[in-house]
Length: 115
Length: 116
Image 1 (cartoon, rainbow over the protein chains, first blue to last red):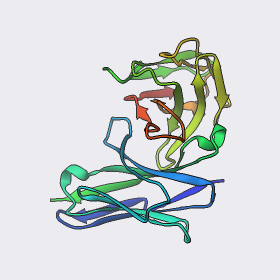
Image 2 (cartoon, rainbow over the protein chains, first blue to last red):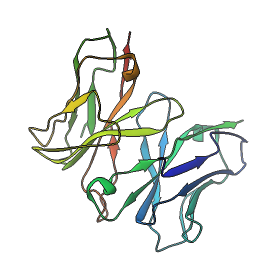
Image 3 (cartoon, rainbow over the protein chains, first blue to last red):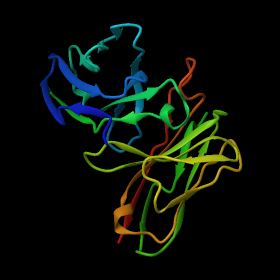
Image 4 (cartoon, rainbow over the protein chains, first blue to last red):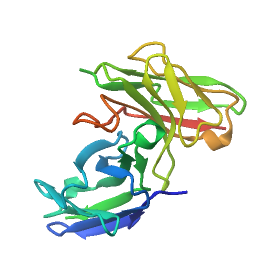
């Protein structure tokens, strides 16, 4: 049972545009929502993360928007650049630790930013 | 700091053979993880460890074994390899799991394994 649903599977954006990737979760015990960025041939790396006590977190051109009632969160990349071309994974984990404390990843979104 | 290192980078295995994927971290992290990544399927947790001597199954443990004799090393063993185990394997580590500020997972560069 997939617990984190990510869309779209792929995304093409023009340079300077806004990239938006959405994720939805089912488990209300989730309380940590990171986004990981992965370049071809590399391991994923943490990009930005949010906890449900805030509705938005911004770091440079990257923003997470969080809607607790809808159980959804999204990544917005402003002024998208060709260097942002990568695969992005949303994830979630629970405060209860143990097996529930492990990250559950979405299936990923391949972003291509055209110059 | 080298971070998380994995060996080998690539490997071709014949059906029925066994091998061990190596993973080492030099950040003194308690938590270590093994994931497999298949195209369009995200990252699936195979096994994880919360400290030396303690391991537990993740979402897809069948066909794999792990051990954690030291804080630094977390090898993944494939027994009787099958074509379904063709994948990219990532090892990761973190200081903590869910609490505190230090639950970022640091990933290694991956091992691309093909079973023929």
